[in-house]
Length: 203
Image (tube, rainbow, N blue to C red; front, side, top):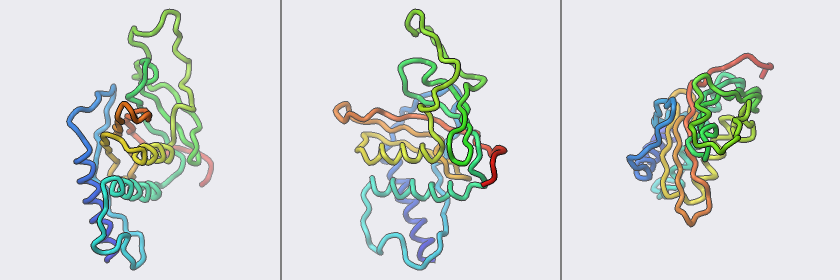
């Protein structure tokens, strides 16, 4: 019971931290999923609480603990074979921000393809530029990879953080992490949605 109460407390702290870090402005994607910043309490067993009673948690620690809670929820997914829609919201050319479908087999990316509604050009491309026939796999991540990207960014002292997670499986659906100009870290912004299991090798 103490462990469950502690998890609920951490979720509350995490939600407050997200609110404190977020501003009103958000990018408008081609197909934006509805973000849900509503973590689910995850009973993990054991009698000892995650944090000692009376412990103070700073904003960064609270966010990292909240991300870990969603990672635990993601670990309860029914399969490591899945696909999902994805869109980067940062990039110089339109195709870098186009909607794609990411297929993952046994937790590793198997294929990335342009979505049917992908907008790959916008007229700003250099003369003679040709959009790649297929997206570059190295530019995309599995859900586990996205969790790692978010954690690394939060540990790099961002200026603004806005996170949304799926309320059923815990994967990140809406992420905006911005840095000060003198930080040197690139801003991160993406949307993910429509995650479904697919056929694949046995688990």
